[in-house]
Amino acid sequence: MAHFLTLLLLCCLLAKAENKPNVLFIISDDLTTTALSCYENQVCQTPHIDQLASQGVRFSRAYCQFPVCGPSRASFMSGYYPHATGSMGYQSGRQNIGDRATWTQHFINHGYHAARVSKIFHMGVPGDIEKGSNGTDDDASWSERFNSQGPEWKAPGDGELLEKNPDGTKPVKGGNTLELVKADGDDLVHSDGKTAQKACELLRRYKDQNQPFFLAVGFVRPHVPFVAPRSYYEPYDPKDIVLPKKLKGDWDDIPQAGINYKTSKNLNLSRVQEQKGIAAYYASVSYLDAQVGKVLKTLQDEGLDENTIVIFTSDHGFHLCEHDFWMKVGLMEESSRVPLIIKVPGQKPAVSHSFAELVDLYPTLSEVCGLPKQDRLQGESLVQTLADPSHRVRDAAFCVNSNSYLIRTKDWAFIQHGAQGEKGLQLFDMNADPHQFTNLARHPAYQENLRTLKARLAKKLREVRSNDLDDVKRSKQRGRK
Image (cartoon, rainbow, N blue to C red; front, side, top):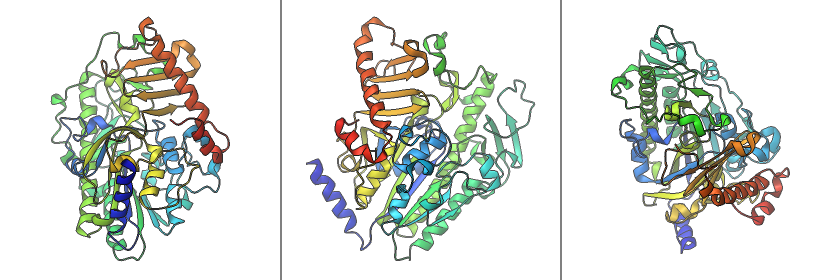
């Protein structure tokens, strides 16, 4: 039945126009699901992303492959897990995949015009944004590309360094730093405003071209520095921000490798600064949401929405003081889980609880658009889930950070920090303990669960570490997921 629904969905979609469907891929930077009201946030205002979620399939269990910008983006653009390509840093992955087609290159090879606006492969934020440079972008992946230069932390306005500034007297300093700027001027002062403007311009231009398009739009907020026009800060008074629940001795059962690289402790954050940090993040998210809204409105105004697939996601999540952690890099839920919304014209809106990974985007969109299948890809197509949201493509997700690994099932989150042996294990009951406060890895009653998940992780690592990227098909046949 699911297969029939899939074919019906594709036939209805492709029958709407003489040409293949267009693709609008929108990706944010460092956006956690916990900041979106269409997921579980009750404070942050994201009406445009919420509207898209109400029109498409919203995945409640989507995960990145590496909770750092560079390797995450190299993974979903190449179609391989980071271990398969060796792209564990900020490079694009091209040096490891050779002449194999990236996601957008596959579309170009089959008649599409593929354009990038701002950050899709890795760009340094704020560095490459200030310079307006390409970062580690892959030129062969695009028919045309555009950068969006912005002032970032140098924007005129009221700036404040949050980390290691207990008395609040130090100004912003730039870099990958927890700081905020309530900026003067309008949306177009900043990179994301320019990105939305250029994306809208391209949509109007592409409307009349006799070629399907793949438009990738990369927004850099809410990545630090938290820079947004001051009007976006107004709804979020730091004094009203409720901090995440904190437990005394919370770190006692967390392995050293599981302590995030940025914490309230090593950043010397006061309660007031923690509240300011979350409020500034929300302001950045609201600014992002407004830019997304401009692009979606233009898509509709130009009549392109009837034959354009829209995807919205983030490269990874972000900690907002949970466990006193900040930013990304770790493998706990807030950092590894991502928002994912896929809207296909003609489909009914739905919520899917199937596990999904960002590496699945390449095979999914290729199949929906009728492009040739590539068995070499390590992702799984989500098309059956789009047609029937009750269908389960995966029953677990896999995420990695260098020598640390996550297997996330419906009931369990298992993290293994390789260099620490048995002392480097974390096991969480995600039904009884969804906020991951109690590590059960050493509890006698859960050793069978631990053994099962360790074996599953070992099997997964054998699959993804294949040195021969064209051998992925045989690896899949030996055991999926």
